[in-house]
Picture 1 (cartoon, rainbow, N blue to C red):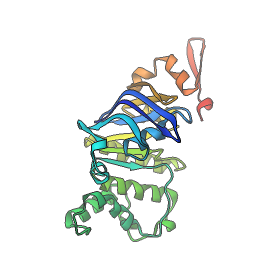
Picture 2: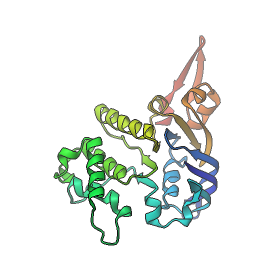
Picture 3: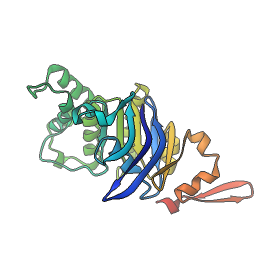
Picture 4: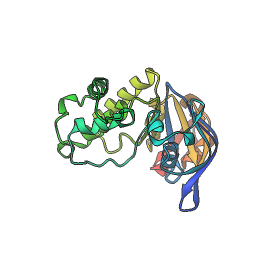
Length: 251
């Protein structure tokens, strides 16, 4: 479990995140949603140390500030929204996920190679292991990066819009993989702009508004509270007993 207590964080002297209390559990998929600028990406970046913070962020009762970069990387994996295509083959990129677990020799062990292969087979990228990233499609490249994060073998996996710009088959493929990982006990946290998909594919929803956690609960609970949609910029109207939601305001 990843926990935030009295956490503030921001950029250039401006506070972008103010979290009094927030728990992101293992064994579940949690979708973090909110309007642009609500602090979604900042939340993930703060957890992995990209954005400095004040307050307490703990994983398994250990303050992440007390962990070295490598020690933190053995517990939390993170994929940013923007993924580049470095001049390397898919296998080499995925092998980077094992960096935090390499010994002094910095060479891959048999166990490391097994983890890499398992991650690539899970994501359907093993057959393209010798292909260079620049020759892969966007969906294929996204899957290779996901394999790298899985090979990291962490308890928590933080993904910033993992299926943006992907076609429906690749979106469904990534969701299936994330569900399997969650069922295996890993904590999955995704940032998303797709409200409907977040409510249908996640175990928990965390709504951020102006850097604060406006609400965190199951989709079933949150979907019945119209007041929470205000935090998403969604207009709610009642017509003949039916509820209409104008999602266009959030996109």
